[in-house]
Image (cartoon, rainbow, N blue to C red):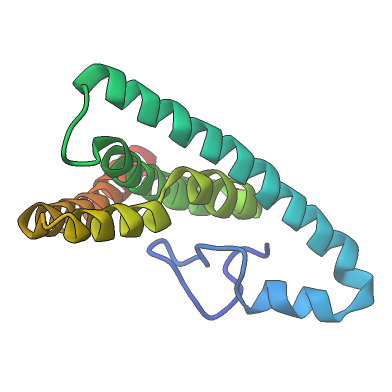
Amino acid sequence: MRGGSGTGQGAAGISPTSDGPAQLDMARHPRDRPAMFGTMLQVALGGAIGSALRFLVGVGVLRLTGQSALPLGVLSVNIFGSFLMGLFVVAAAHRGLTHLNPFVMTGILGGFTTFSAFSLETVTLMERGQIGLAGLYVGLSVAGSVGGLILGLWIARGALL
């Protein structure tokens, strides 16, 4: 990905994902298809790593806390993944590492965080009649993830300035 290209600018002034307009344009030009394929491989490899890490964290949280009515493994990876996203977006922008965005942000962190699983867990709680717990889960997930990202940005900006 070209750092800073595209219309969707992230918190650090860079495009947060690899699926912005610059990437879509690459697929239209035959000369750029090898670069697009390389980017796709980076995302796929990062996604495999992130998904494996998500599984390990989920198992670890379950072993530490035992069975819980609240899906603590998914909650943990969403908050921690958002924190890591905040750290990385600033570090990449300041150190000229935005070329790693497809691998790290879309791949690893995209595979690590689990908002599709979050949605399923929320609906499952609702279907079980645990509306209050579902609301608590949604509130903690959203506030914790946004808070984790802000904390990551704050720490990274303080460490790099």
